[in-house]
Length: 367
Image 1 (tube, rainbow, N blue to C red):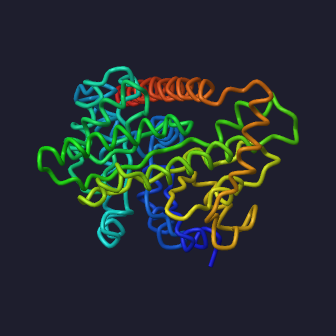
Image 2 (cartoon, rainbow, N blue to C red):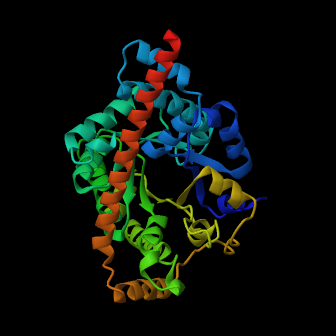
């Protein structure tokens, strides 16, 4: 049993944070499902940009669609939906056998809509309708504006992945948007079983603040924020409000750890995966990190997982950072805005790449 399978046996779900045509066409996703217990997949504009940039597998389709007069946005949308549909098919058996707990595939709404609640709601509904498969999670950022769209999407019965969360407060706002959508469904006598995950980004804390703190404190903030968010998550699931919803058939929103690849070359590849081995949670993992982790490159798994996170240690870590003048929630807002900018830039780069490939292919066809 490799360490990835060991993490699965502890009750932690591994979802691949990658998608590309070679991954799907060469059977790699199927192998990762079989050999490393991968049970889901996520995507974002940066992942698709990398896929389009690193492979020629999309080039002929781009040429055909460009020659037919399709815009760059339309070309991307059609190609992405083809990939996502294929990934959904690969994970459908897991989805069905787990009664919908696993086997999800995430596709994000265009990042430029993050301050447009109505536009985000419409885009989520359009993606949900076009893919038309039960294991699609529509990814919506957890900004204040977009959480309005989260509530509306859940009310419409659309499974959602609320992304770009960086703190306990942001997580709680996302969870409350989800619950409001469920409560509205119950009020209208609709089925409350609408799945959702809340994605907390971990490594970006350490990437941003490692340069500002003593070396002995580095690579600790991301884990501390995640563990404090996990405590908030557990408290919410024990609350009378949630227990009432659950008694009426609602599904618990799951907590997902995003950005789990260590960016510090001196840190073990498994820093966040092993440090957040909390039963019931989901860890997304980049392809390179998955392979290194499965090969045993890094920290050992804690026996039995982290059943009771060390709140004393976590609190001490957060207090240390507070003493250095770091305000957790204000910094989380900044990280969220930075994440939105990064995804928006990746989107623009992706559109430019499709435009470039279209021109090159058209020119080649005329030469």
